[in-house]
Amino acid sequence: MIYIPSPRHISHTPILPIPNYFTFTANKTKTQNMSTNKLFTPTKVGAIELKNHFVMAPMTRCRAIGNVPNDLMAEYYGQRAGAGLIVTEGTSPSPNGLGYARIPGIFSEEQVEGWKKVTAVVHHNGGKIFVQLMHTGRISHPLNLPEGAEILAPSAVKPAGQMWTDAQQMQDFPTPKAMSAEEVQQAKTEFVSAAKNAIAAGFDGVELHGANGYLLEQFLSPISNVRTDNYGGSIENRARFVIEVVTAVAEAIGKEKTGIRLSPYGVASDMPHYPEIDATYKYLAEQLNNIGIAYIHLVDHSALGAPAVPLSIKQTIRNTFKGAIILAGGYDQAKAEIDVESGLGDLVAIGRPFINNPDLVARNQNSWPLSADLNMDTFYTADAVGYTDYPVYSA
Image (tube, rainbow, N blue to C red; front, side, top):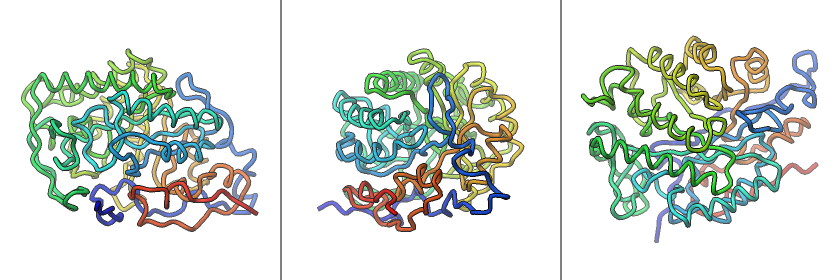
C-alpha cells in the first residue's frame, strides 16, 4: 500500500501556508471598486489575449499517477479557468526530470493525450493555459524515477536535505551525475521536444522553470555549477544553457508563446546566495529581452519566510526586459494594484488561494468572501479530496 505524504513530508514544499491574498476593504476611499479595478480588465501576454491580469501560479499537486495527466487533473484546471492565465504544475520534459513522486511529464504520447483533456476543458471554460516545463535536475531521487532514468545536474554537487518517495518515504538527496557535453545537448533537445508536444496538446504556450533550484537555475548558480567548460565559470557561461534552451524553444514554438520563471535571491532546493546574483540576473534579463520572449515570471518567496528579493533587482529586470512581467509572492489587492499600475509588473500570480477558491477571480471581483476552509494534509495526496471538491461561492 502506498503511503501518501502530508505536507510536512515534502521537503521542497511547493505549496506553503501563506496569508490569504486579496482580502479587500470595503472602504472605497482606500481601494477602487472591484468591477473597475485594472486587475479585472483584459490584457495580453505575447500574442495571447487574456481576460484579466490574474495568473494561477504553478503548484505541484502530485495527482499524475504514473506521471500521466488524467481526468481528475482536467477537472481541477477547468474549475479554475476564471484566471486570465493558468500555468500548470511543474511538468517534466524528460524521464530524467521526474524528480518528485506523481508529477506529470510531457515527453510521451500518452502524456500528450492526457494533457489534451486538460487544455480542452480550460479552453471550453474560457481560459488560457501554459505548461510549465520543469526538469528537477539534482532535486530528485532514484525511487521517483522510471527505469533507465538518471539524476543529472551541471555538476556532481549533492544538495542538502531530503525528499519524499512513495516507496521508502523520506530519503536523502543523492549526489547527481555531472552532465557530459552530450547530455547537456540532449537536455536542450528534450526541452524543445516537450515544447512542441505542448503545442500539440493544445497549450497556449510554455513556461520554462528557471527558478526554485531546478535544472535551469542549477546552471546559473556558481555553487551548484562548478563546470570548467563553456557552461561554467563566468556569468556568461553559467547563463549559456538557460539562454540556449530559451532560444531553441522560442524558435520551435514562437517567442510569443514562450515565458520563463525566475527566482533571484531564492533559496529553495538548497540554492545559497552568491555575490554575483544581481549581475547574473541583469545579464539574463538582457539576453531574454534580446530573444523577445513573452514574459518573465518573477518569484519572491519572502512572504513565506525566505529572504526578500530586493526591489532594485525587480526594477532592473523590469527596466531591462520589455515583455510582460508576472509578479508572484504574498500579494494583497492594494499591493497588486500598485505594482501593476506602476508598471513594475503586468500581471500577478496567485497560488494557494486558488486551491480552496476555484472561483477566486469571481469572488474578488464581486467582493464575495474567500473560503477559509483549506486542508493542508491533502495538498500532495493522490485523489479528489482537497483537490476538486472545494465549492464555488454560494450566497
